[in-house]
Length: 404
Image (tube, rainbow, N blue to C red; front, side, top):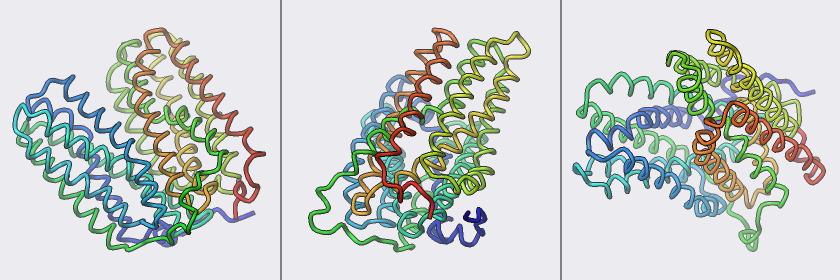
């Protein structure tokens, strides 16, 4: 059995090196600063209505997904660090347009969210492709997990800084936008300086598609990714509007989720690296299903008990999220033939982005129907997805399913 210990220096090297690790942190800080105030910027600084601002932000995210096939083809032509840097630079352009937009100008704001959406959607695939180029096997999985932990830490720190600065009004919002743009620019320069590329696909390879067995994985991923919006959408909705709990519980759950992901993502991924990736991903679905059933039971408790019970179950949900995040991208990189790795990762990001886009609408539609509809529906869909992932085992090559 392989050892489950990876030294920090080896982890940094497998992640692209020290400069690239710094780029990840700086980029995450910028995104953490941006997320809380983008809607407020459109409403408070530009004077747009909340519905118009929300539609523009959604359109930007969707447009980013539309660009993913082109990103995948670029990656399959050998782009790695250049593609990562581009995903950061395009967000610099988005921030510049944000700053240039005059009050009441919806089109420049929409253009800004478009470029921000393209960068946000392209980054995960380009990052995973770079890591898959410089690391292999268990080290690659740990590096992907380490990148996620770093990103969550940066997002949390950036979000905290943004929250503190929001008391400064519109001037503070403009300053935050400038700092965000500078952060993206610095991160892009660091990422580009790594100078990682891959051998382009050979003649005839470019027309091949990822193996059919990945279709089930991508479809299941749409359901799995709902877990990422449980702490941000489902739990606040249930706790505040249905259980009449203090908003403090929502903040505590979100903070605990961030801390657990940052501290446990790498060790849990490395610990589970002794098992086949598909088995781990199936287990993630089972843990998430159990947590959804736990939420169903917790919400049925009386006043005074429901909120603490939901908070306790949220730890189980976070553990399922950690297991899912540590195995899903790793499984895609293991299954995809080298010459179509970029397009495979792009398709995976499409399924992730689609799931993240539709999950708030699904959650908010199910919640008024009662706990059984919301948590029972999520549990059933996730259980079916986990079963689909597990039963695809025979269709995948054994070599891709086992650890080196």
